[in-house]
Image 1 (cartoon, rainbow, N blue to C red):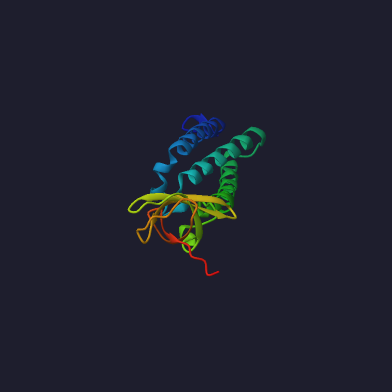
Image 2 (image 1 turned 120 degrees about the vertical axis):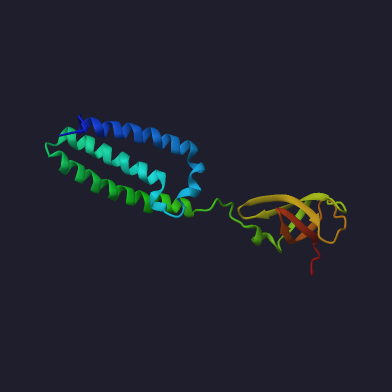
Length: 175
């Protein structure tokens, strides 16, 4: 069978090549398009291009190896492509989108924590505080909450966090 004067096998091959090139472009510049497709996740360029890649690859292979009518091959390739794209969406893309870039903590978890001043914190100035966690060591800029000097090596209590800066007070143990 021919379409637009070309053999179906040739059309499948051209669609495969063009979709592969567009996939590389989307991988390189896909962040520019992310906000556009958030309302309709099934219209994401990765899913659309994956559909065409699966459709053309399956269609090409079936045209090459099977002696079926071209319309049956197109329908079979379309059904299989929809199944594969659905599986790709459910088991790959959804988990990737829902996974947060995480270091094992959130800033809210650090409030009330105890750290050590690794750079002294002057009055009306910035220093640095280090907190040891199970997931590793976290160091962030710090300001004295009470506007008092905190020397290097002193243990501090994190009172609040604003714009990534710890507001700390010297830690006073109940012991």
